[in-house]
Length: 69
Image (cartoon, rainbow, N blue to C red; front, side, top):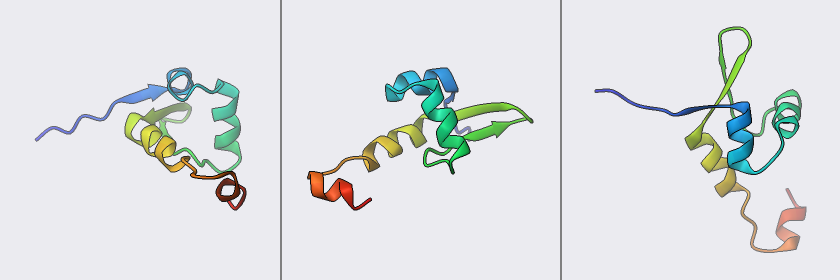
């Protein structure tokens, strides 16, 4: 059985989320709300599934709800 997981470079992950590369870099330094994978000592990749989960978790039904996060 082969499991395929699409790994995106930071630039592609930023494009997918419609944010800047700097946003993702700051997120990694600030505690990584968006999960990432280190490949080797320097390469950073993002799983497409993790990015979609992050998007789904950002949904708020009201302004008041988003202020409590």
